[in-house]
Length: 380
Ligand code: SF4
Ligand code: SF4
View (cartoon, rainbow, N blue to C red):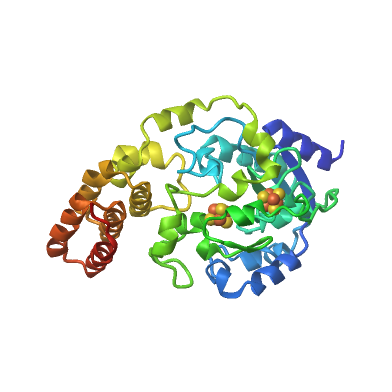
């Protein structure tokens, strides 16, 4: 057995769905592509993890020789119906950059331990372009929706990689879009037209991006503001969006297959609600938000904002009392979006609450949202 074979077998034994290996050479096409997207990706280029540098692993680690790439199928168990359309499957599966004390992070840690035990030096803090690396390592192809597809699995895979200083046997690249001819289902289904060309995304229009990246203090002038036009298209999605993967013919086999229950998710679904998320307690945050959505959003006010948007879009008057409570939230952001949601739901009760609060609220931002809500509100 060669080290390459040992590595691959160990990875498969750990449960990885696919494993492939590519060189640690620069991802020059990715760099070119990223630079060509201009202001659409300026927030990303300026990210503290420095993606442009990560795309040239040997500059950060001169001894780097290989990138070992892994894909893990995160749709091995079923997702509760009531969480679909609210929380993206990848977050429900608790696998995206999972910390090493949780099962999906422990798998990655075990893999690293194995490599070190076998004499490899591992690159630290190199932000590899995972989709490009996985395709160059022959384990995925691209979809026009920008997701990576693993043969026989689909796009519900989470990718990771490890850079090592050892030369290994390299796999044939599969850097290609492998969609059925003429298919544009994902482009047509995207509610915000975020996919403006095959394999080209404007993240600022993407629901997933708006749900988690719009936070104050982010690079390139990003703030917590979500344009009203996008809010309306978010539906009930509070974290992530799977629409362009759900409509994809390459995912239908997986979506139609009968998967075993995930008992943990069943428990979460039993007491998950948008109203609880809006006015969340510490317990709800630690048991229902953090285990699933621990990654992109650290501050609970953004979850509350997203819950307010979702309740507004749901349009059920039964949410009005919870939104009225949210108008007393200490966070200006939460009060602002609660006002927006009340305007969206409409009706005389919502209107009265907004009018009453116009006098009461001292924040200019909240008052502005109330004004905008009162201007558009439908009353019956
Ligand atoms: S994740 Fe949603 S909003 Fe983003 S591109 Fe796909 S369908 Fe559009
Ligand atoms: S929906 Fe069609 S075009 Fe889009 S990724 Fe899937 S197969 Fe490709």
